[in-house]
Image (cartoon, rainbow, N blue to C red; front, side, top):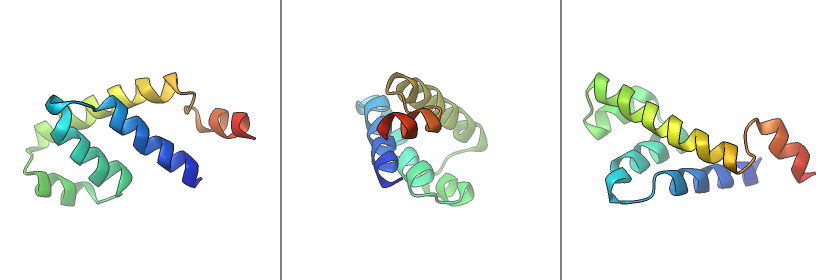
Length: 83
């Protein structure tokens, strides 16, 4: 499981690379990796509800594509191929 989480962190880094995505990588690390409650992350980043929804949709879209390309989704595919 630790390896999957480490690979998931690398997915976020790859999918959200570049200066235009710097704020999204902070949200990814805080919310998706750090498991901060969304209210905490939302207020910490100073986002409106609309921006929160937009940013999380962008993150899910970009990271989802990266997860698929790396064979990490669905997770059972990742764990059975690693065995």
